[in-house]
Length: 406
Image 1 (cartoon, one colour):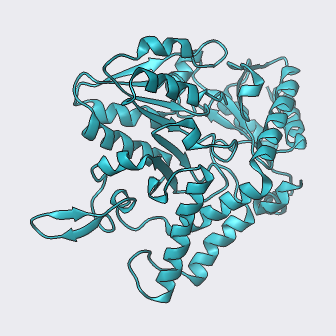
Image 2 (cartoon, rainbow, N blue to C red):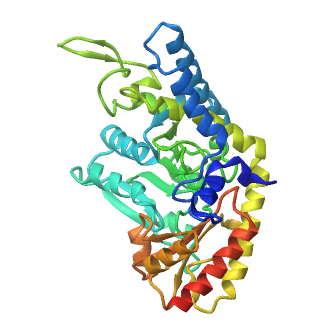
Image 3 (cartoon, rainbow, N blue to C red):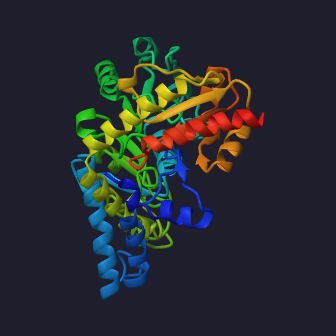
């Protein structure tokens, strides 16, 4: 399939710079297909109004489209009820909401939260902030030399004080696909009250995600990493748990009645969605999901694994490139972190850009993992539906050319 023709940025880049764009930074944000861009424009051109409040035609149209997306997301991840889908500003806000609500509802001094060594800062810092004043301990599940979780150590980490386990489905640095169902099963077998949280930002849109099958209590992900607009995230949570949450923010939409003496809060999902939401992003997000489904998740997963294997093979022939913590290829998605033995990651990324090749350089919001790998920064190649073997070839040639510069 000629997927690139669906993404206007590739043609526009060629017209602007008279060169071909090789975009290998999908893990940071994906490019957007025209159907998504058109959906954003269509909202502002034809239905611009606020949702849930107005009774006029524009408001009704916008509200229907907005709430339709909630149902689309519910079906996409196989949640039980659309009220279990909470729209946030991003996966980061979803984690901040979770950390605040869980800490203030379920946790007391002496309780423990388990995360892993490969977590994004969004799955570390909110827990630290929320628990710093309550005497709650943060424990870390280690990884091995192949960049895989040491699941056999989870039994020892779990104690009667363990109340939350929060783990990434796919590492944003290593591409490792973690055995989430196994982790959830271990946690629930120890204590069915342990809350299980999953960071799915690098998984949804790349592999099939079924929250019912996984059995997790909460699952977070971002629109912009799966071909949808920026500024939108999703928090899935089991209804009975979300019902027990206090409001995360106060203001419009999350209320039923307000007096100067007291406020009665709205029902789910609106109790946790204060203020005017990112309406155009939500409406367009349904088009991103539709686009993914039209291509097919099986095709996407197979394509990305094949391109990843090709990239690893070609990189293995470059004598100055070292891929970090790469384990079983069948349990990895299209993210490859590497270092050049002679060129710093930031310098390399800048030089590659001169060849119109885009890769990420830095700590990738995973400083503890960088410390574990004993590096300060890496270069990261990440792929999407539009990545082709020609992109990998151009990447390899650009690496060779960068070495001539130095």
